[in-house]
Length: 250
Image (cartoon, rainbow, N blue to C red; front, side, top):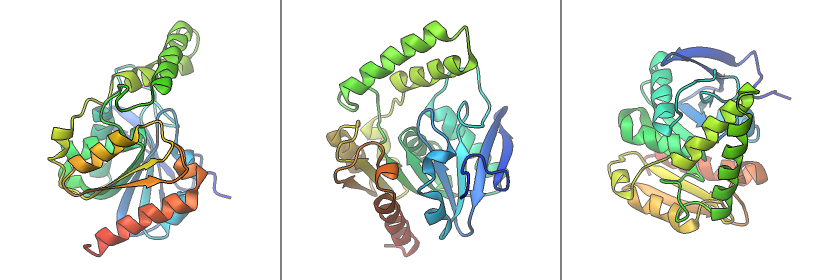
């Protein structure tokens, strides 16, 4: 069994924007950038990597301050993550890639599509949001993040992981700061996914898709924000079906 996220045979480090970023590469074909959610790592895609790598060259990344990538002292944001991914693709001499992003990874993908449109062949987001208020995110989830931030802040003098948790929870409460009007500038085809029981409100998910000129939406029945792990085969086939259609120009 492949130990995704800890696979020395596939893993490398790249220094981008002054930070060591860890990534693993699998498969051959058109490049596909795979981006995980908040506080997660490459390993969260353990049900996706083999399926995606059968058709694509998958570059799975630990975003900064997460997984094996280096910690940072400054403020975290999705625009910063997008800048990192832009620099990584340039360093790998990849002019453009398909992007599949879950949660924070989806937010980063949307930022990339706005900031670096030429690098985004297509985009799949899972459980993404435009802003961090109760019109977009379940109020109970926001309350839990606020409580977590207070705990991480209190404990941050004692351990590096608590300081990391404080930075990540601060980002969740402050960002993203995108608008539907901004999304109209996205030129790439975008599949917007969410679970039927997602922490992202369905109306917000549909708003994202509706605001993107080539956007489409799929709500995965019976699933939550963790759909890629709850029903890997359904998630994989939904993503691959969309990507195949882009390859065929449909």
